[in-house]
Structure formats: C-alpha cells, structure tokens
Image (cartoon, rainbow, N blue to C red):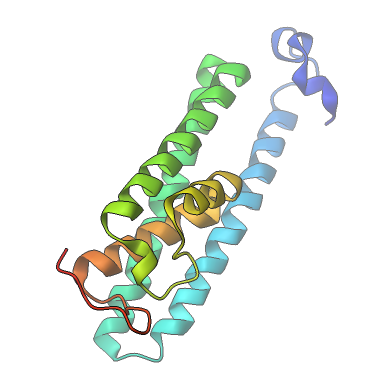
Length: 164
C-alpha cells in the first residue's frame, strides 16, 4: 500500500482491490483507538482510589465518552467509503472542527478553567488542543464536562463553587 491510493486510478480501476484500503483504514482506526484506550486506563486507575460505586460510574463515563468519539469517527469513515475519500476527508475535518468549536464555546459557559484537570484551559487553547489531538482531547473534555455538570469536579485552589 502506498501513495497510489491517493490517485483517481486507485479508486476507479480497482488496482490492488479493496483489501489494501481496508487494511489501511484498519491501521488508522487502530492508531486512533490506542490513545483513547490510554485515556480509559488512566481514568480507571484514578477511579480505583475512590469508593466502589464511584469507580463504576467514573470508568463508565470514560468508556461512554470514548465510544461516542470513536462512533463519530466511524460514521465519518463509513461515509468516506460511500461518498469517496475526498468528501469523506472533508466530512471528517468538518466533524473535528465542529466538535472542537463546540467544546471551546461550551467550556467558557461551564467555566472549565476553574476546575482541576489537565484539560482546564481557556477556550482558544482547548479548541487548538482538540483540533490537533481530537481522539484524546474531545473525550477528555466530555468526561470533564460530565464531572462539572454532576458536581463531582474538584475546584482549583482558591476558587469558589458556582452552581451550573
């Protein structure tokens, strides 16, 4: 599998068949799933320090956020198989930009910067982080957003809690 996949001939005359394409997409999916699983493992280890009930809830929050993110990516990948790689790539870029923009705007509304987290930045930094490393940044934001909304997020030192 090489650069010929990015030519019109590779997609129109079936040179090499679809097997290399599926292997390539499988490799890309694997490279996206591995960092997401790292986030799951991190949050599962963190939740072991809490009570048993909180463990299950927090690890499930992480799993749901990661599954949602992978699902979005899978829909865009499936769409690219149907409508073509160029339109599919544009759709994926639009999805990444749209979800990152939503996260940035929403982070300002929920005052994400006030809480202790590795992702507690301002809207611009959060947007750039999500765009550049979407497969990790977006689920992390979803997990932190859920903690803020449920009142389980920890405030930074010196900050006062605001009702959300």
